[in-house]
Each structure stands twice: as C-alpha cells, then as structure tokens.
Image (cartoon, rainbow, N blue to C red; front, side, top):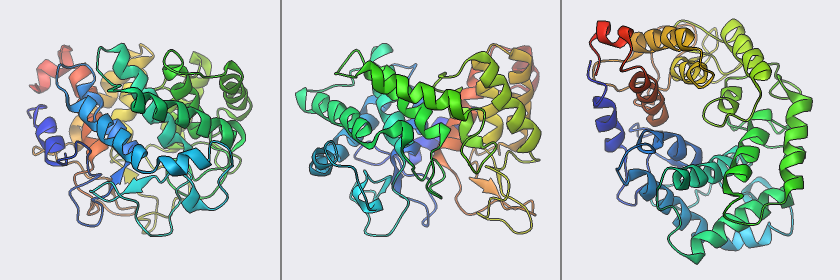
Amino acid sequence: MNIEKALEVIERMRLPNGAYTASLSKDYDFVWIRDVCYTVLPYLHTSSDQYEKAYYALFDLFKEYEWKLTIHTEKKPVYLYEYIHARYSKELKEINQEWGHAQNDAVGVFLWGVGEGIKHGKKMIRNQEDLKIVQKLVDYLECLEYWDSKDNGMWEENMEVHASSVGACVAGLLSVKPLVNVKDEIIKHGQETLRFLLPRESQTKETDLALLSLIYPFMVVDHENAQRILDDVTGKLERTYGCIRYKNDLYYNEGSEAEWCFGFPWLGLCYSNLGMHEKAKEYAEKTHKIVPDNWEIPELFIGGSNVPNGNTPLAWAVSMSYLLLDRMKDSEWLKITKLG
C-alpha cells in the first residue's frame, strides 16, 4: 500500500476555488467548513500551497456573508439560518434548506487553522480584509457567549452545550490571539466550561467521538482529562471498523450504531500527541486494516452490517488516516507492513 495515494484521493476532491467537497458521492458533495479544515491538515507541514488556498476560499466565503457576521457580532442569532452556515454548495453559496447550522466548532477550527498556518510559515492573511474577518469571527463567538451557547455540535444534531464545540472555540481564540483583539476573559470562560463538563461531551452524552478533537488537533485538555476521554472512547465507542459517534446514534443504524472509519486514525493521532507511541502504533495497525488499496475510505460502515455507506471516499477520513500512517513511517511496524 502506498500512503501517497491518499493525497491523490484528496486532490480529486479539491475544487477550482481551493475548497474541498466532503466526498465524491453525489449525495454528499457539499463543502463543510469543518471538513475542509481537517482535510488540508496533511499540507500544514509541507511546502505545498494547498493549505493556504483552502483557507483563502473560506475567507472569501466569509466575505460573501460578512453582512451576517456584522449583524451577529452585536445581536445573537435566534433562528438556525441566522448562524454562520456549516455547509455550502461547491460554489460556496448557502444552501436554502433547513439544517443544524449552529456549529460553533466550525468557526473554532477555522480560527485555529489560521493561527496554526502562520506558526508553520504559511501566508494565511492576504490583506486587511482577511484580518477583519478574523476579528469579526472572534467577536461573533463573544456575542454568542460560546462558552454557554447551545449548538448543534460536530454531528449537527440536538441543541445543547457541547464540550467539543467549546474546546474548538478555545483553541481557535488562543491561536489567533497574536493577530487580533481577543479578550482573555472569553478564553477563560470557555476553559471554565470545559472544567465543568469534561469528560462528558454534553448533558445528554456521557462520551462522544467528537471529544477526540480536544486532544488532536487542538490539545486544549490536560493529560488527566485526555486519558479519561480516550478510556471512554476506546471502552464504550470502539467497534470493528472504527468507532460509533455516541451510544444510540441513529445515523445509518440498522440494528446497531454506524462505525465511523476515521475513529481509528483519530485515536492513533491522539495517542501520538500524548507521546503514547505503543498505543499510536496499535491504532495505526487497526487503521491499516480498514484502508483499501485505492485509499477510498468510506465515511462509515452501516450499523449491523459489514457494508460501507455511499459517502465514499470521505475526505477527512482519508486525511486523518494519511496523517497517522505518515507519522508512523519511520517505525519498525511501518517497515514490516511495507507502507510508504
């Protein structure tokens, strides 16, 4: 298996405007802010300009809807359509369909990605207009009072305060603090919410796959909480082909919860971030087993079956699998499996 094929698959999902579709499936070829930010992580540590181009596309998207940002830096959204939308057409236009658009983590991961790009020498800010968008997104999160804001979360479902959303916002605000005006108090409010909520994801969810984002890529939790999250996810959510998102998840549930393929590489990346290399190796081996030779990794395996759903390949599943196996490329395990 050649892990560089992963980048070829990701490239097939890149649009002329620089953004990426979530999948090549005709039913799932929308552009999600979150998916784009995760999909381009393999380019963060390279000289390629794909990372910047993806963020330029998202900056241009925010400029298209800057009027909405301007309103909601002063007045909280009430209806879901008033929030910064989570998904768009391939032309980066809002889709006129009722949707769970209150997804604060998408704004958080965008801000985090801007700051991370700068740390890695990327030219993330083209002009003052881009910088103004960063400031307005910070002000938008403050106006929302994100630390106490019910949102649809990473999985676009019921409205409640999600630790993964709060953590993404904390990471994003910390990341852009050197660039724009970020009040210390709004970061502290988010950190206090995390101390109160963790290791739970929310009032209704004891654990959730989305909590892994607090370890990778954000690293906004201490080692003790990180370990508790990992123990909960591996002990309660891990399955044969990956991880379920949370108990009693109804999405593609045909007798049991769907098993999401990016659960294995995500766990491996979390263990790697914590310096737990043997555990990272264990999940690299599990990832290797579910990656097909053509690297078209599906979104999930339908619950109660060994059949993948039609959202194949899923961009950020390919990205995370590549990231983990690339990290492991110098290990003895990788040499034995002849990846590279």
